[in-house]
Structure formats: structure tokens, C-alpha cells
Image (cartoon, rainbow, N blue to C red):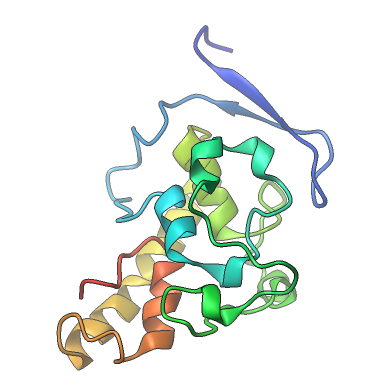
Amino acid sequence: MAKNQKIVVVNDKMQKNYRYVLSAPVGRNFAPEFKPELTPAEMLALGVFGGRYLRDYTKEFPASWFKKAKFAADKAEARLNYFGIKASLPLAYWQKKGWINENDPRGWFQWYCRYYQGRRLGAEDERQIRRWKAMKRHVIAIKNNCRRGDASCRPRQRQAVLHWAYDSRHF
């Protein structure tokens, strides 16, 4: 392990003694084709995943991410999402589709949070970035079918791409 690298140990409801290395600077040195428009902290403050994501494992990430985060008390609440609409599928669906990797049992956003913090996983990073890029078709659909800034046009699709770090408030 290089001198400036840090090991993170995770103990939460879904991972026990999971360890990973932070080998890149926070928020930098992303793959050239990966250009998310929002940071994890911005996404949490805007309202994503009905306020369910990251609630039980905030210690893994900077406290600043959670100062403005919108969290549900119990079950996901669509009203907490930026567009006020449900746009997520249950984790069981993601698992059935094979979209979940053992390193990130909560899915893409967990991967993104860890990637943003500096974890790099080679082939898994490439797979997740391909999935992120595939969401661009939804961005294009919004741009092709809605007036710029019309939040009432395709709100579910806008919320869905917001979950993938595309800032759908502005297109």
C-alpha cells in the first residue's frame, strides 16, 4: 500500500468487516469518460432514493455529506425526492438483474460514493461507468421531449437520472 493510501473498514447492516483502500484523491482522478454532474453530497441534499440511502452507514463518509441530506424516518418517501415522485426499483430487483456487485451490495450509488472518496476497483469501475453512461439515453429523451427547465415534463425520468448524478433540474 502506498504512503498516502487509507484503508476503510465497513461494518453496517449489509457488510461486516469489509475493507477497501482509498487510492485516489477525493472527488478527483475519475476515469476520463466519467463526468458526473453532481457529487454524492449534492445528490443527498437534493433528495434521492426516497431518503433511504446511506441512513444506516453515515460513518463511512464525511459528515458534511449529511448536513443537508433528506432522510426518511422509516420507509422510502417519494415526497423527499427532488421531483416528489418514486423513481426507484427495490434492491431485490437489482439483485435479480445481476446489477449488484458484492463490493457494493446497495448498488450503483454506493459504488459512486466510494469511487468519489477514492476507491478504485478496475473492472468493476469500468462496469459501473458503462451503466452510468447508458443512462444518457434517458437524458436525451428528456431533452428531446421537454422544454428546458420544465420540471413537470417526465418527472419520473428526471428523478431517475438524478439518481445517476445527472443534474436533471436544468435540462
